[in-house]
Length: 307
Length: 263
Image (cartoon, rainbow over all chains, first blue to last red):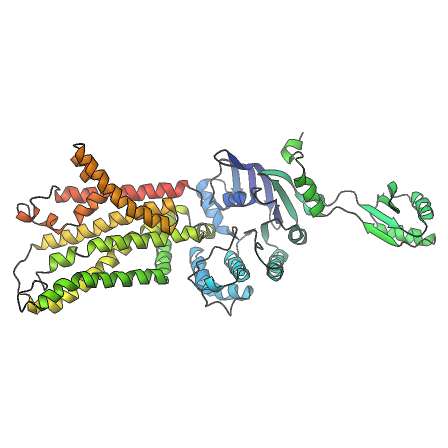
């Protein structure tokens, strides 16, 4: 089921085109990564989904609703944060959550468990102006999760955090994703996305470069690098191995693609010939390599590449 | 849902130290305003005027100019910080609609206006009650005058509060918004003088701050023909109409400005 569908979404600020004709869908249960360098239009796009930025053009469907009035109702099933945690500094953590619970028309009894879920029970009655950034981010996540929304959208939830804080937030999001929730996660930290997301959209300068499953983006033909003491014997053995193709020799190693993508079978075959490998490395492109390849060049966008 | 938004505004207001400090400062100022005539009445050996009913015109109007300024400060504080802290956008993300959010803020205006006026009445009334023994009654205006003066003061403060709301949603930053609100008061007066110079007195007296100032004048509500109102050029009904119109227009523009701009 399509939870969120964005079609031709565009936002102009005067002459500046912040988001340019962006189209993607988010299905139920997906953890959708929204990737792009700083200033690529991620936050503006999410702002349009949240209804706090008015699109210049385009179409947005949320839980099957697309009229302005119905979208206001549908947005009640969203939870999320945009950029930094937006909290009332003079209110305590508990009071901030009480306020959100009132807006979401929830019983205040849900506030306690939400604070516990993000490990903030002990600091719940302190004003949030005294919280560390990590605590504020956790409180913002707790606020977003109140009422168990059907779609969670987090914009740069680890921004400005130290490694420990990033780890905490990452674990929280992982926990949420494992519970089968639909999540949109905007970030420029690729390790986060690779660990958490099932699908990604990559933006650059407001334009969508690619939208696909993470597995698809990193699924380019795997190339294996092989090394052993006797490269000539290895070369001859591998050339006789039926799944091996596109072989080449470079820098004292043999590079080959495997049609069956099964390096264990290759190892068994070579061991049967008395050849034991000193190195077998899978050179499958990482998400980071794909991202850098897409965003590092001015190559065609998905729309331009379409026939 | 508008009631929920309003309830949340009251919650935010109640929990905010800056709001209580503002109210405390206002109480001190009002006490000083009424303290002078009260002290004079006590020292007058039975000839003072600061007791009931003589002090009613003073109580109903003397602290209202100050109350109006404090109203502006409170409205700006309660609106602009929402943009500074980006809680305005978070409220929308959490489920309030933009019309509900601005309606909650607009409902703060009567709340602030009434509470500030109650402070004026409470402090003035208490001092007048104490001073009554030293102040034999010598002038009693019709009850209608007292009621109209109170309504006029409330409307004037609401008018200024609406100006503050418009400035707050337009400027979105507390310091600059307060500065703009202050500068606007001066510009309005200068504008009115310029319009009078151009032989456009009717337009001049209809400017928001001119209407606000006229609404605060107690003599405006005395019976027609009394010497104290001879120099006043507003008919009471028209003055109220002008005040209500400005409140409505300013609230509508605030709504449009807020709805049009991204958060």
